[in-house]
Amino acid sequence: MNGKVYLVGAGPGDPGLLTIKGRECIAKADVLVYDYLASPALLKYAAADAEKIYVGKKGGDHTLSQDGINDLIAQKALDGHIVTRLKGGDPFIFGRGGEEAEVLISKGIPFEVVPGVTSAIAAPAYAGIPLTHRKFTSNVAFVTGHEDPNKDQSSIDWEALARGIGTLVFLMGVKNLPHIVERLLASGKPADTPVALVRWGTTLRQATVTGNLGNIVEAVAKAGLKAPAVIVVGGVVSLRQTMQWFENKPLMGQKIVVTRAREQASGLVDRLSELGAQCLEYPTIEVVAPDDWQPLDAAIDSLADYDWLVFTSVNGVKYFFERLFAKGPDVRALGHLKTAVIGPVTKARLADFGITADILPKSYRAESVVAAFAGQALQGKKVLLPRAREARAVLPVELEKMGASVDEITTYVTHPVNDGATDLAADLRAGKVDLITFTSSSTVTNFKALLPAKGWRDLLAGTRIASIGPITTETAEKLGFEVDITADTYTIPGLCTAIIAASR
Image 1 (cartoon, rainbow, N blue to C red):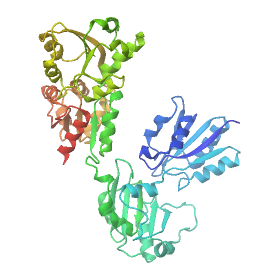
Image 2: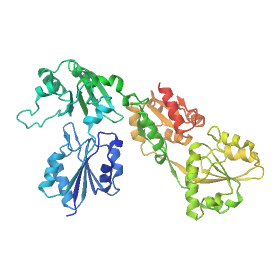
Image 3: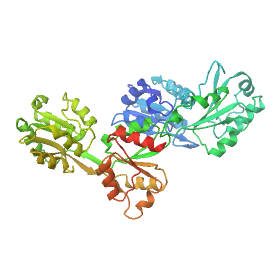
Image 4: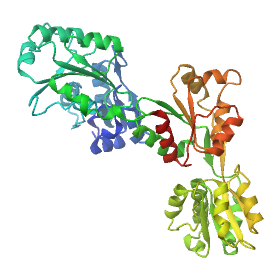
């Protein structure tokens, strides 16, 4: 038998807290069996042909019983598969990983345990609560907030917990919070003992409610806090007043729509996520190669005839060099050319190929590129401009006025994407969107096409719009959008800075 099972802790929710070994086990799995609390973002590490089976348990709604899960992973392994059982938090801390291991042992199936970062530690840490502190306590206890309902009597020594443990951490105890509080108070825990509940700890949905044993039940009910949450009881909770850091992020909890092409969205999504925003990806365009490479191929064959090579986007750089290399030449074919780029990101992408741009304008739009050429002798010079089919005409027209001969070559094409139109409308209607970002005129145009023809303005009521620059803003306003934020620096960092400033 070649089958084997990896019992892997997925961590508490933040995908970045997955261990390196855990990621390796996901990648090598033939079968991935995962829980409700295991971040969906981790599934991207699985092989494309891996079988992915969801067995989540949520508030009594069980996709599969624990016995069913045990049988499933065992049978998949007996069939000769590598099985990765992905469990939220740590598999051996209230994760029933021990029960799964016992079944595997009984059937002679080899297995390994890969510990994960438990929410018992991580959620309080992200809420600014250290579980131990020399000024407060040097001991901590992890307690289930939901004991086996088939037990005749509780195995929890409530009096020992109330008297002898400095910090108590209850997992899966939100529904039983009144009972937990009642038992601790009855066992002698003072009513003014600080308490915190941390919901969806370490994720951008994190929310924390604090109080004490005397008022926490009322505070949680008032806040409407639901499972999943970790309950922390003890003096260390008071440190949150000065030590909280995660929930202080400037965009924490804001739901922001990203309309950029999916293959380019990661930079904006990563930055906004770092700032605390929940990103809803609704790409309105996709970037693809042109239908006909012949014009670009002809330009590449004639590179010796050109004096300047001008790039107005990262996509232009990407597709130009892909085609250059596909035809056989390398960057030495460009050695005689001077180069100009529209902005620092395009400059950095060009530098990836070992070429330093000769011209970088002060601001990042076509008009600024034209201005940057003012000191150049362009009369009789030949300029190669590989860019999008839909690009504005400003640059080639103005360069030709300066005496240059410009070959504008379609190097890539943007196509509208409308797969998420129904979900987008539903999110807007439900008030789940705080801000919409536009990073180009094409994202604006295609976003408008995703909205219903009638009543689209009502859908956007209360939702702000942020634009990467004045050209994009102009396009949006012509289409009837009210733009609330326009970046002063026409880059992704500039857009994020403008959003932060408007959120203060």
